Amino acid sequence: QVQLQESGPRLVKPSETLSLTCSVSGGSIRNYYWTWVRQPPGKGLEWIGYIFYSGTYTYNPSLESRVTILLETSKSQFSLKLTSVTAADTAVYYCARAPGHVPPDPSFAFDAWGPGSLVTVSS
Amino acid sequence: QSALTQPASVSGSPGQSITISCTGTSSDVGRYKFVSWYQQFPGKAPKLLISGVRERPSGVSDRFSGSKSGNTASLAISGLQAEDEAEYYCCSYASSNTWVFGGGTKVTVL
Image 1 (cartoon, each protein chain N blue to C red):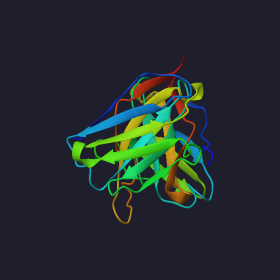
Image 2: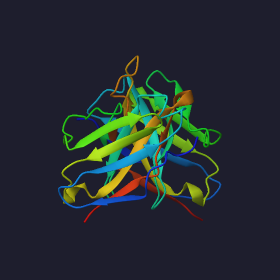
Image 3: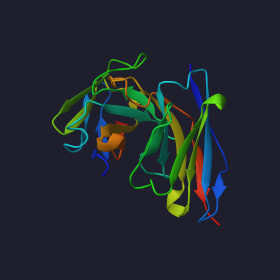
Image 4: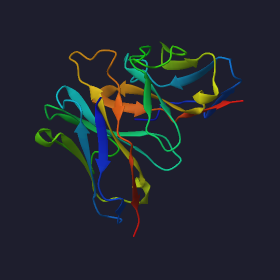
């Protein structure tokens, strides 16, 4: 049973960089899209972006100028960096995965999630 | 990339059936078969209920079913139970290899 766990600073100052890491255990890194999703307090889910195990990535167009997602296969980890944060970036950040079958099949969805990490942007 | 449109809330009595709609565009829901639904309890991570419009992952109750017509996907819950009270989100693959979520629907069991 795969498990995902987010880690990183819970408090970030405005204009600085938010950094989170997701550790993957109990499953392979290969053949999956490794994903970040966020949820501002009391609001809905927003897809941030993902990286395939091969290294190719896609970001939400609304965030792509500030987002970087990296994969460290040797550590079974992937990371999120979000630059120039403001209070609007305060949210619970979830890491998740989606199967990367070629071609994509009906399982192409976010089938495993971390518990989430609340990151607050405040001075 | 705009969020998919879901009703803010849906309610029903125990044993009844309810349906949650999820309206997108011809660039997401209408174009791709990769529509999924998630159940979320307060303070918890979302859980996958439906993938590929209508496929239930192992362990998900058959009281949950998905469908799609044109630009609108739907999640039906039959035999509504108190434990179904939660927030439900739809999600669709979209052009340029991106994903978009709906705004969420709160289901209340009366």
